[in-house]
Length: 65
Image 1 (cartoon, rainbow, N blue to C red):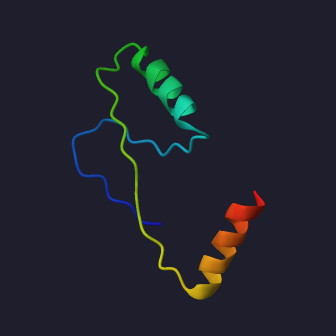
Image 2: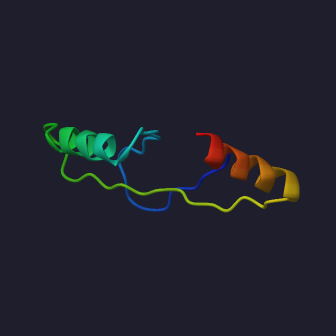
């Protein structure tokens, strides 16, 4: 994976979270750090090309779990 961050940041972190609650709790804790002036969250969104095999597997996964 290749990602490019454009902007003015002192620190950029990759964070994988379980759910929205965990994300919001983490942001809240980061804002409490002395010297942290602001915390910005962004999400990488992308599309996956689906062929018939991937689509069948996705539909199977949705009905099984």
